[in-house]
Picture 1 (cartoon, helix red, strand yellow):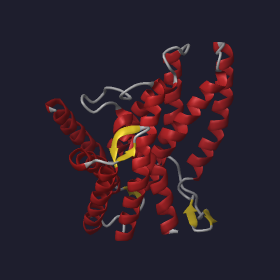
Picture 2 (tube, one colour):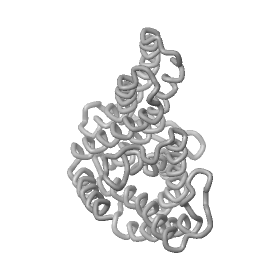
Picture 3 (tube, rainbow, N blue to C red):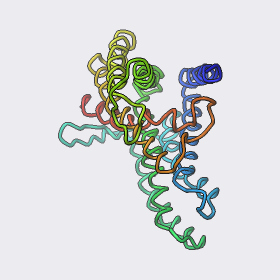
Picture 4 (tube, rainbow, N blue to C red):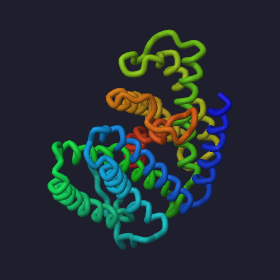
Amino acid sequence: MKQRIISAIFFAVAMLLGVFGGAAAFYALFALIAAGCLWELMGLLFQKDYDHRLWRRFIGVMLGIAPFLIFGSKLFGVFPSLETSSEISYGLFKADLMENAIPILMTITLLPLAIFLLLIVELFLKSARPFDSIGYYLVGIAYIGVPFTLLINISYWHGGYAPLRVFGLLLLTWTNDTMAYFVGTFIGRTPFFARISPKKTWEGTLGGIAFTFVVAYVLARWIPDFTQAEWLLLAACIAVFGTLGDLVESMLKRSAAVKDSGAVLPGHGGWLDRFDSFTFVLPFAWLALMIWEG
């Protein structure tokens, strides 16, 4: 327990320094987190009997982190914005691509090119399961790369980096996880999803959700970056998809027959163990905000 508490303190301090240290610190922190999550994910997908396993993990990290690195550069004004508005609208969804057009075009161009290059790589590696390998790389991009890329858009507000938005999302996610654990430990009796996670209970899950909404209400009075309705909307996204994200990672670990995705944080597991809920929440939080603000 002592080791777990010490690890949690160092982790919290590092996160706060990265989030509130400015755009460059945020960019470096989440590039590191994304790379760590991808490295562990590739390790779970490419089992120990896979040929050229180390190289495949490295390729998976490079491909998965590329969208984040490209879009993240907007924080530093690397890509010029379009001179005119470029709005897309589909039903309730509305978004202005004015500041994102160049990164989006780069990603759309590079992704098909990368797939063709991977086909060539698999050809020369003489892989017995070439399309399995390519599928794993694409899972890394979708499961890790895209969510962290969307975090860039969530954190970008009024023409610059807004750390309180990131802090609020992290706080709500960890409130949901932590309070679900504590409530479930003390009063949990009814299994929630025993097939995947035997220790999860309905009492713990509902307790985590309740505390998440309380924290969202407090954040609405403290951080004006989102309206009260938006904070509560984010709490709802986290309550549903954060819980599902934790279960999805548990399913992944069960399929790989491992307890933790890694051991970077003593007593807490790996990067993926710490950010499974947060990563899974980000696409839905981004979409909810786009629809609400549209």
